[in-house]
Image (tube, rainbow, N blue to C red; front, side):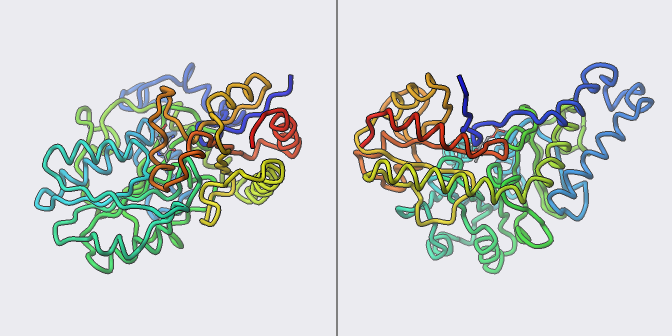
Length: 379
Ligand code: PMP
């Protein structure tokens, strides 16, 4: 049976060249970069090269601005908790209702510790209002954390505009963006965009790199308290023996992404084709975030009075792997916080499916998805 993987916002397969680059660092080049054996075998130098590659990929001005973490969840936790600890006199944080749980849950936990958190609303297309953001800013606001692109809908927040407005109001507010879904799909060049952003989270496994490696860009001059204390690795900013194969793999994945960024036009064509054909096939279906600026690879589509869990299960049995944009993983009636914030109609919210492409998909995949969907009873 032909399988079609269209769940690339969840994770991506490791690219063969990434795997090849990493492999020696599990075996003959296993050394600890902080040990004498690591120096002798140039492991610390390999990490330095990888840091330079990642930094150049993002257009950072200094490789020291890149710190390796275990994943974007850690990067997000660190950005938020680290900013709060470093700016103890301020007690207010601004975020949105549609952030990834690795942002939302940290903010909720800080609010239990006495911080005030404003969770901004979005409109029916998932867009954020600049006016609402500006109205929320207070003299004690320490951090604004807003995602670059939403993992469920692909809706892009205009981070350049938002961060510039925040910094103009108060340059001492730290601006963090969770760019986990943006990086690798759209260009990040810190000389031209994200110029007013202090902290950027990203992750290896969303860009054909391995799981268990991520990064945080920390603009020079930004004060951030460490989250992990210990052996002073990563220039004393993030302790823990370095995940050397992961770091090498992340750097290779950045090279792979850099070469593939122009392929995103083709990916967008596949996404648009699927969207058009599904809407023709199921006229009552709705595209979540239809009018918003969206990532080129993501389609979140809602079918009326359909249980997406059942549909996804049927699709997976016929070899199509998509994802659920509506119900939480436990299958309870706790529907997606993102779609709830967008006030997707009740008879659609349970029937939302996310198809997320990567450059490894092709036109044949769209054809297969349509064939399989034709057999389903969506309205
Ligand atoms: N933020 C966003 C927007 C994501 O999509 C994800 C992964 N689903 C994360 C953060 C967490 O990434 P990781 O798996 O690397 O912890």
